[in-house]
Structure formats: structure tokens, C-alpha cells
Length: 223
Image (tube, rainbow, N blue to C red; front, side, top):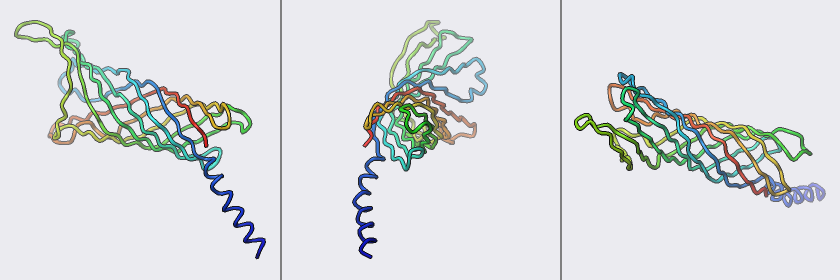
């Protein structure tokens, strides 16, 4: 009985150390390329093109063991795109959209235990908030037959715009363990939106989605 009590006490004393060793926090910086999808309906000369942007944020992970963990990031990401017309080359719109994304993922790690370089894969679900929208470009005035430039913020329409975003997220990458407490990662990641930017408020559907592909680097402190 005394030996059993001693064993339980020893396990309880070692438990905080074991838990502490499985946590990590870090910062993320990278670039993204956003692909915007929407139905242009009868406007057959309208062309949609992707655009580059930036992303940055903070990250935290709890690892159950060497190969499985739960990871959550808080990411500021730009989801930009371009709109132009083939019949009127003077008309060009550039949309700059800022989002706050919260991906929650299962993180799978693989590789040799005694080798400092390991691979990993992240897979999960994300929620997000559309923060701001801005556009600039050139427009054509048919009355004056002149082209003019414009730039300014886009005001959100409560009836039309859906500022809440949800979707799937996945990524693959490599991590280099510099020492016991420092890890450096590089990851290719994809955010696949399942929520339209436009609410279902008209008889004619106007669904709009984003697929955002990124390459990011991260630095982690491992407790």
C-alpha cells in the first residue's frame, strides 16, 4: 500500500513536467496567392484572376506524442483578386481583402526520432472574419469616352455581404529542430472556403468563394 502511494505521488509530481514539454508557441510570416471564384452570369467578357498577398500570425500546439498534436493559429491574411474585361481593356479592378482566420488542425509529424529534420502535415477546419475591403484600378466613362483611375474602401452591405467565413484547411511542411527549445518550420498551406461571400438574398444566386494557397515560415519555442 505504501509503495502504491509512493508511485502515485511520483507520477503526480512528474505530470506537470511531462505536460510542459508538449507545448509550443510561435510566430508565422508568409505570402499567399488567392483564387477567387464567382459566376459572372451573362457578362461573358469579364475575367477573374488571382492575386498575391501577405499573411502573418501566431501559433500554438499541444503534442500528445511525437507524431500527433493539436494546433491552432490566429492568422491575418490577405485574399486579393483582380477583375477585368476583355472587350474594354480600360476597365480593371483590383480587390484587396483582409481576413482574420482561426484554423484548428490535427498535426501529424513523421521522420527519424534522432534526426533534427522532420516532416509534418496539418489538416482541419477554419473560421474567419472578413475585416476590410479596398479596391483600386481604372474605369471607362462611355459618355465622355475617357478612362479614369479610382481607389478607395468598399463599404460592407449588411443585406448582401457575408463577413463570416468557414472552410477546410490543410498543409504540409518540414521542421528543423535547432536545439531542445527552438524549432523552425516551412509550410505550404491551402484554405478552401465553404461559405459564400454573398448571402442568399436574391432569386439569382451570386455565390463567391476563395481558395487561398500560401507558403509560410514559422519559428517556435518548445517548452
